[in-house]
Image 1 (cartoon, rainbow, N blue to C red):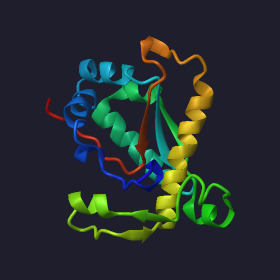
Image 2 (cartoon, rainbow, N blue to C red):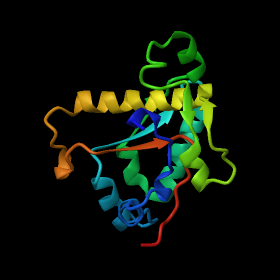
Image 3 (cartoon, one colour):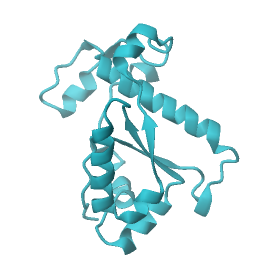
Length: 169
């Protein structure tokens, strides 16, 4: 399979990612521990639909409680792509994202998923296009490739329904 045909596998299920991700994404309630965590990223985004401002506010409040007030200086809202509108108007549907995807790999990790070809929902298309749009924007704006604090322009992306919590390392 080429890259465009690979099924999505949640990060915690990917081999070789676990230990490194757990250490990097360890989120603690103390300010001393949360500041170094935030310093790994030149920018931190939350993808949120214009039509859902309450989800943006809820995520901001939740993230500040869990990570700490330092997050408020870095967290930026990124306007999500509405998948329903994209299906009707976006030339990127069928180019950047496909209307069908193979869930066979996902089914290996989640007993609720049946293997085989699936049609992408409007939400899945909007989510995919939102991430792709944010990646492109970030790359275009990154410039020299050397971010603040020597973090080489690394971004962290949240979706507005993310739940954060402490991780044991």
